[in-house]
Image (cartoon, rainbow, N blue to C red):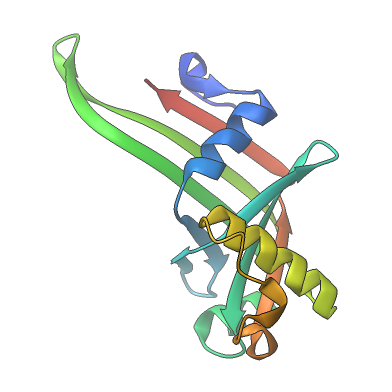
Length: 156
């Protein structure tokens, strides 16, 4: 779908990635059956071969787990809100945002999970912590979402 406010659209993948990297949380949207289900998540991201990948972890049970195992199609949203200002006789928000879609793939190999944990530790400024020794690693699932569609928007 084409963005209505072309003047606010960000098309450069590196700029979109930069915004995502500066966000603390993503909102993960899933198909919950009778209604969408959205949950805030800690995450990490990488950019490889011209695509952004998002990583997050999950308990091995619960609503999110059940939904992802039933339908792995997801939407990832992240934003940075700065302030509202008076502009041209109205009020507007100053922000940057990213939205993308993809399929949540559960990482099976321990090496893949450790690598994703390294990305997450780095994202939250704990890159010195040894990811392979994270106590929750054996008891959680780690998911990877390659964003097959992604867009950015801002009003600065």
